[in-house]
Length: 320
Image (cartoon, rainbow, N blue to C red):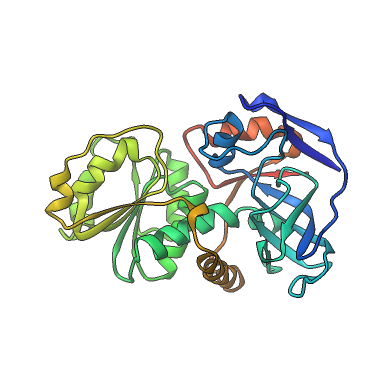
């Protein structure tokens, strides 16, 4: 089979398409023929050698994929050959024509969802669900501000928050992105390139303030987020590309909380609950991952460049 291999950490060009042996499942393992691969920002940090936990070289990047089960190991009871699945986490790397994973890492993919949509579930939808429900404990009726709402995590967060009865405000940097945010269910879409965009928040919330902020770029926004919060408000830091200076009294006066998160820190029981909820959303139509672009597996380097550029629009997916 063909797979992307990384023999040294560095720029996107270190990813090479190579021929490698087919995979065979061990006890409790599953092999999936990959139809689509999800590209995530964390993939770029790992490839560059900038992530805290580095894989042994050489390695195949990627944690998210979707496809058909073509092999199951001894002891596998809940996944069968021929099943459509999305893969959230794996043992072999997702940028390949096949992926090896543990049984509990392969989840049913309903017929109503495409393989490309399935490849957009693991990290993006998992991050959005974990941030809203496990970190912020967001409630129906609360005002939720989602920065970068036109990207993979952002669109998932908009859909999940709206389905749960929250009042959703999303931001995006382009008119196309803002239209997408509204189409996913946001009540309001703001232009985060407008220096005065946050001045609309008091009117939108009738003076209440924001209960939950999902923050994708904390080094730019965190200090401003704290000033927007309602009493008891929470900011969940999902992403940051540098340091930031804040005024602690902005948090003190609101009894506010700044909550960090990394999806990989979730406990096994949390993953089980998360994917039960996400699977139900895929089945009933309240969760519809947005695919913005599909590229060939050989274009992995281009995908890594594009996912880090501004103007995010849905999910970037590779197809073997």
